[in-house]
Length: 283
Image 1 (cartoon, rainbow, N blue to C red):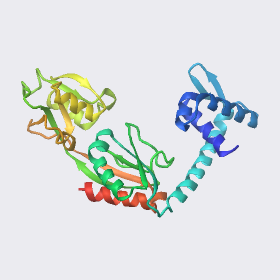
Image 2: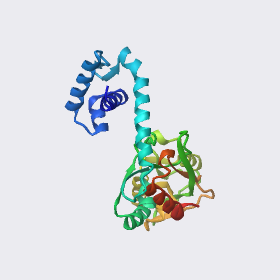
Image 3: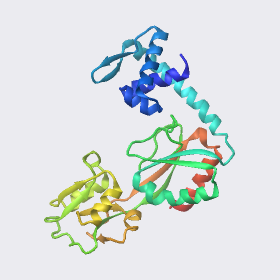
């Protein structure tokens, strides 16, 4: 089994469908289907059961999954070791962060870095999911909770303060419990976020009119008078159409952490960028 075959096998096992696995590897769905057929013929076993809902590992497929993951880890470690020795300021850096953090805090730093290092290409992925640093889905990640991966070097970068905002000219909350007020808050999947809990506690009788996991969307809804919203102060401060609402208690702050795989600590283009980010944003 070649390494390319292992990647096909793992992508299908993890994604569950040929289409999703193809998108993961940058292939077409027919190509993935052909490669899987060739792989199964070469090993003489059916590795997946085809169902109406997708691909499910057979007993034979399950038995080799752990070995395929070990092969993947060794191959990725080999790639990281080579990448981590790069001393030239050229090549690709893939960065992942939340949407608003990337837009409002990272892009000014990235623009400055790009002017000084034009041979480095930065790819910024703003997504709610956590990209794996071990699998090199990203080279550097910014998260709102500490990293728990054993091979990741990380540090606390900054503390983000939040505030309650409304559109300028809009009415303040009509009652201390929020009666008569409307809210823009996190979607149900993120309803356990500290700021969402704070908003519910401070204004229990307010009506939720909009939900979104995108802070910029929340901010735009707020500026158009859709309701009160808890927003990161660095984001809200960039919008002249928002006004801070004082309820006598500030929403909970959040820490932001930055991390990268330890094998990349010698990668010069990453170290230069990290130093610049820390210098501009750390507090």
